[in-house]
Length: 132
Image 1 (tube, rainbow, N blue to C red):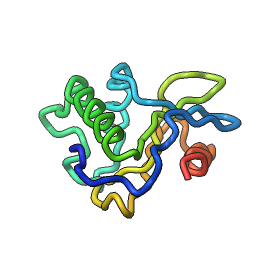
Image 2 (spheres, one colour; image 1 turned 90 degrees about the vertical axis):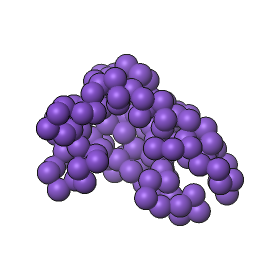
Image 3 (cartoon, rainbow, N blue to C red; image 1 turned 120 degrees about the vertical axis):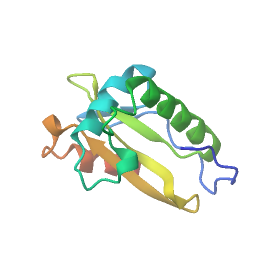
């Protein structure tokens, strides 16, 4: 993830979104371990650059660096990918937001991922609706 030099055509996203069941908030470095768990759960069809490799990389520390880069990109682009937690049981369960990723600033992509333990409950739909 690298910061963009393009000027965003969009106003900056809210830094926190709240729904009936969820709170979408800025990333914390403390989320690194939970994010690494998401990477371990990923389907083998996910591109290798977005999975834990045979050497165990990225490490939790390296994922912390990715989180810092994401925060810098968000500040530069006005787009955000926010951590998701349940309001009744705080703690990172995934993420959702708008990102440049493999796209462009004029056509951002919505991204999301949830821990396996909370899938199938409509959280991704609820989070995506709040982002949009």
